[in-house]
Image 1 (spheres, rainbow, N blue to C red):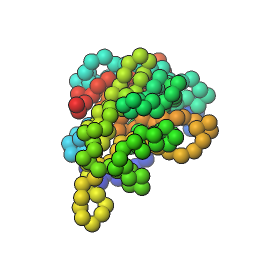
Image 2: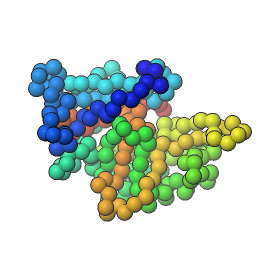
Image 3: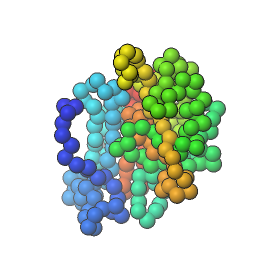
Length: 229
């Protein structure tokens, strides 16, 4: 798919409670017409932006060729306006616990990075000696020293290595130096007033095949076939 392809809009894949005008959501519509076997939609995102395929969206089930091992499921949190939001039992960056006592996380393919409250994420970011707050970058020489990010779903650990959540690029300065972007960032605001604590965006989803089961109201994660070590 061409990188400069125009965007025609947003293709919503949510629940009835988020549909406008009481319209039947797309996945349920396909299922009711017996065009798909189950009210499920699954995503695979290629972590390498240079690959032409980019990713795959699969309606009606999962594509077993694009993941390995078991699928780890988490039920979505029940709420009036149903979202693709789950409970995490922990988020760790090495020895730092960024999610004491558990936290909520929205699983969102429309968000690029992993986002969390700055009061939590900042403790990790400021532990990196070369962290540039304005640019959201680090000196690439520190990448090999960064810890894994671990997301606890139930009693299972979903891990991202530094090689997965840190990516190099040419910097914005005139000397064409190489800098490294972090795939995790913090947002400001009152945690008490936020609808969710964390957002797991493409920086996470590009390494975990993700299946959204509308019928059973759950989300499943499995290691992508291109899970980079």
